Image (cartoon, rainbow, N blue to C red; front, side, top):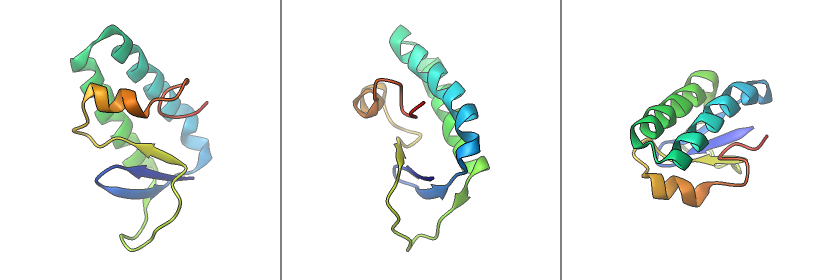
Amino acid sequence: MIVRIMGEGQVELADSHLAELNKLDDELLAEMERGDAEGFRRTLGALLEAVRRLGAPLPDDALEPSELILPGPDASLDEVKALLRDDGLIPG
């Protein structure tokens, strides 16, 4: 699957990593619901770091359709809320 991190570029990520990412996504969603800004910032950073670590960056000139779009590391709580689906940022 192709994942875009806003402001950074695209990463190719194996579907087998979705379970690990979903755990972080669930944590992020819970922190947002509680209004835990510090936890939100920490977990968003961990989610993006996991995508970078587990995925392979695509070349800057590659323009593949992104199956997932994640906010950049400096995104605000409100910006992330605008990207949420019923099950968080990551489906499943």
